[in-house]
Image (cartoon, rainbow, N blue to C red):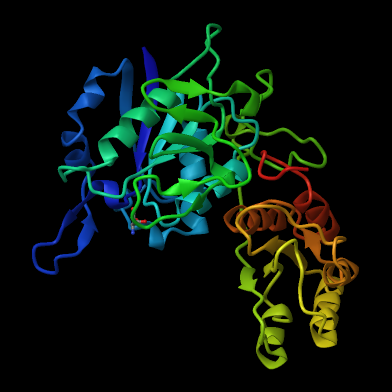
Length: 366
Ligand code: ASP
């Protein structure tokens, strides 16, 4: 029998209605499990993974709008601490920031050989037409599925939702209403969920099964450390910002963002294939910021397709100003990857720039 750790962080799936205000509020884990008795029919031992702070104090379930880099670190720590004891992990999470959490976890947990599957729902499990029951049951099945040699079928951070399993760091929340709430516009599903769960092994990452989970500075110098020799040190640097270009963008306002001394990384949402207006003040501000060590990443406002800064003159100037191409990465993935790399290479902006253009966990097409 497979062993699975179920971590409940909150979200609609476990919410119930406050009789006084009429709003949905996070509720207890036992309430949630009581509404999905089918879990006992699955061929898996399901344990409750404690959602706890750095000192081990239990955290209350949250609306995922309250998610934070500190909580991502706690989640990654919980998975790493329990990594040997379980075959797979399911994280119950609100849909609003699920794509950010999935992206952040994918960067923090390097060389995953076990599934980490996030799911949630649009309707609470206590409601008649809930999508939560099916999402949860399917997520557990995927997180415990193995091949004939016992290797996990999906050794990745995935989002299982509304009939599809998507690579977590390729995913965006696309609907506030549809049961199919997530999409991966630039990468196909890892599995289709219908009458059968049809996996697509050719689209799934292949980990190195001979090395353990890596959690510390492995990308450039190949240092390998893991939680098991107590060298776990995942950090995230949240001194980053996302901003969108639009016709009418003003120097006196935008310069405060680009030039802000506290900012170390910027995700700039450009037009089409990575284009921007050719205002001299904008290019100058970008160039000066880059020189001062800030990392500026170009991510398109289009949800599908890729940045190609050499296609148009107005994109080419950005490249000259030191702006890095985010290729076909999602905004969620770009901002969390920046947090991860800026923390890993605090004094090496060139290393961060170089790694921002490379696929670390399948988050972009090179
Ligand atoms: N506001 C909720 C959350 O993200 C929405 C959901 O779970 O669907 O926690």
